[in-house]
Length: 171
Image 1 (tube, rainbow, N blue to C red):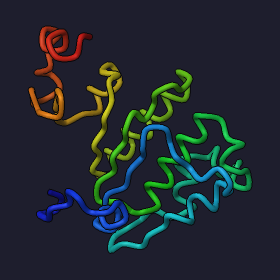
Image 2 (tube, one colour):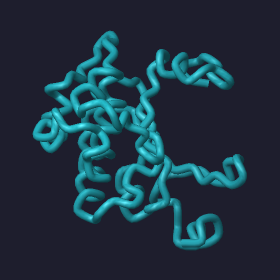
Image 3 (cartoon, rainbow, N blue to C red):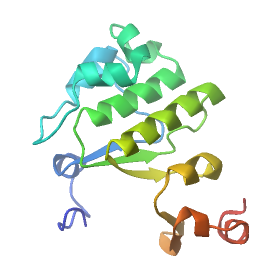
Image 4 (cartoon, helix red, strand yellow):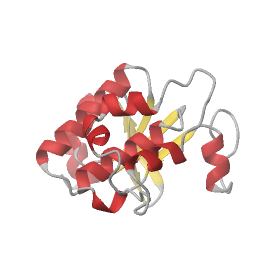
């Protein structure tokens, strides 16, 4: 359920219309559109929505520099910035990030986690699916550990002790 409504089984566009912005694993940007076109293609005006092209460019100055570059001409880090910016352009009530920094260079990973903390500080609701606990836990308010689709543990980040990490995450 999301905002009190059942969303299971709905087509992706109906889920997006309800205010969920997804940054999928693998980025899935449009390779044959420019950075600007990728961002504008997903833009939605919602009540109270503040995300505009200019604001995304402020968050990710590199995208402004590459605004006329095709999606397939971007580095992996730039593509991830674009995927996040594209999701933000939907003015989501909930932003879901699936493995937001997987496979990226350490400096880009740091930049992405900084953006996530900025979004959180601004009040954006975020659901992060990730396995990099060192970066994830300082940004989290609540943690859930899933095993075969079932929640096996939930709690605050400080409660996810090394013993629990070993037990559930093999960390």
